[in-house]
Length: 397
Ligand SMILES: Cc1cc2nc3c(=O)[nH]c(=O)nc-3n(C[C@H](O)[C@H](O)[C@H](O)COP(=O)(O)OP(=O)(O)OC[C@H]3O[C@@H](n4cnc5c(N)ncnc54)[C@H](O)[C@@H]3O)c2cc1C
Image (cartoon, rainbow, N blue to C red; front, side):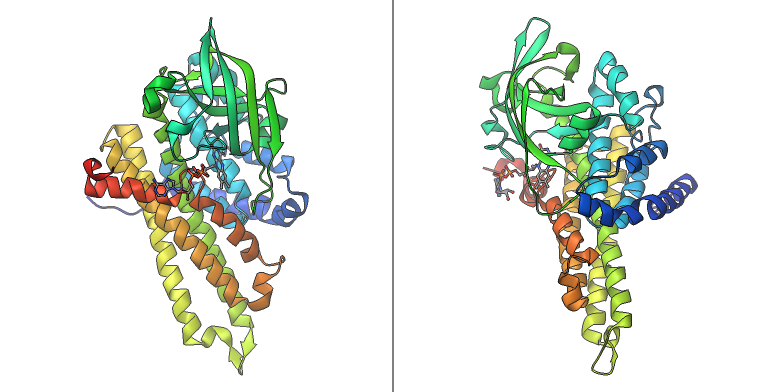
């Protein structure tokens, strides 16, 4: 059976998300860029709309939605915010809260998840370090057992949502070595709340995503209770991919939505701009560019939803080998993020000098969308996953 339709309930989710985004997100974007901060009022409204509890089970105040439904809302947010700051807040929170809800201890879930669903707390991911991003063997952050606690020492960098977590509470799904001699087989995940005393924070300036915050922190002698261990000790690597893959699939549909909006704005501009005696949209060279980028981005959206569907099949019904799912998601993330950058760049070009001005949404979008070729797994890592599954693990060294 092959069926590309969304369910009736999913269509309703889309309609209501679209109306919300038009009313509450789009009008706030210019203000967010100026203030470099997401309006706290918007966060409250998004929480009330149920946007932060989508992957959290009902008993902790969430709505336990399937991945495709989460993607539908992500696409709509991606269409409404060209800077991708609000989409990032949405995707990081939902993907990593999902991992906590699936593998966290009962007390951890009771303590944090209801607050996350209410938008009072946030969940981030703290994996990257100054000397480690793609290659886990170079990780230095460690967690040593100390009675009923784990003492964490180390450093994390390029971490999104810093301000949300510092101001509102919540914590970071933190990757640390628990058996340093075992390499990737000695890594565990901990939920690490922000601590002024034990975390020395530096904010980093980024290229785009004006409303988002990005930072690094040194962690010193931070005792985390055993109940904050996510999953089994030393087996963090067996589960962390589930958070990354969810995030990557959501990024694919955000990229699709954001780029299609840029194409739409570019076409509108060309319909109104006259050169050589006619609207520039009549030039076939430009029409072909519209056709090419539309074809790519609509395909990217299909790939993104397909990836989310595979994720649901694996997570909800235990279907498909996890490596197959990784490959489907890597394909979607690789193509959607690369194509989206190209499409937005082209839509900027159609708008001439105005396109290059700070006033034009494509200028914001181009800088924001670029982050997706690195964050939650770089495009080279996506290629490595696809190559491994296509050529065979034995040829990867
Ligand atoms: C906007 C943004 C937000 C981010 N948010 C977070 C966050 O919230 N939490 C977090 O933990 N991290 C975050 N990151 C970090 C991100 O996950 C890393 O940038 C990414 O994993 C790559 O790691 P790296 O930067 O250390 O690059 P490196 O691993 O040092 O790699 C450098 C370059 O070499 C390539 N490369 C590495 N190995 C290979 C190979 N074997 N073959 C071919 N090419 C290779 C990489 O793809 C990359 O292009 C964020 C990054 C960005 C840009």
